[in-house]
Length: 224
Image 1 (cartoon, rainbow, N blue to C red):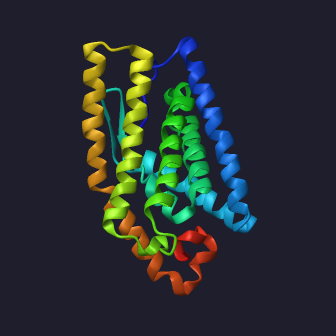
Image 2 (cartoon, rainbow, N blue to C red; image 1 turned 135 degrees about the vertical axis):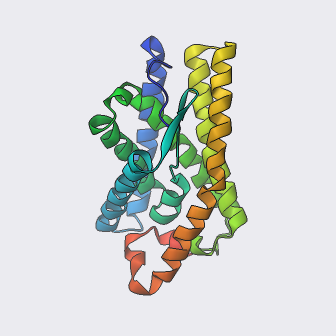
């Protein structure tokens, strides 16, 4: 998910700055909440793991351009379930920044657009999880249907934000709408893979429970 440079530019970039700033502020609020139930060392370790994971998802795993953006296997719900929402947000933001600075500098002008597109759906699935996952259910015990709902919400959110940026930046021309539609169709194919990856990660976490892995994961992963 890297929106092509030039899709949004000029004065219109101020809205991207505003949304990215809002996302940063909300991430800070979530980080403060996280630190009330986790140690600073755990928070730092999970954030670093999120950065490394994001870099791998964007730079190493297969990705290809389609329409107005690129299709990536982001695994945002995996980061959310294992690490918690605040470390996942930090991981996505800084992982994207590292990739843009050192490996894809042409994407740097669109950083605030792209980081908004990654983080806003993440915050959305955090709210969704609190509504659809019973309070007495740890994340390692989630069923496929629950994971699929979270994945659909996250990937659908990304597609919606990409569509918004494309239309906001380039208007409602037929060519632009076709590019948006082709990206959306290709990107939603990720939903076929991500829930399986999520369940595999949760199964691995469940198997690692006796090793004391809970010290380095979000508390909700193991505790309802």
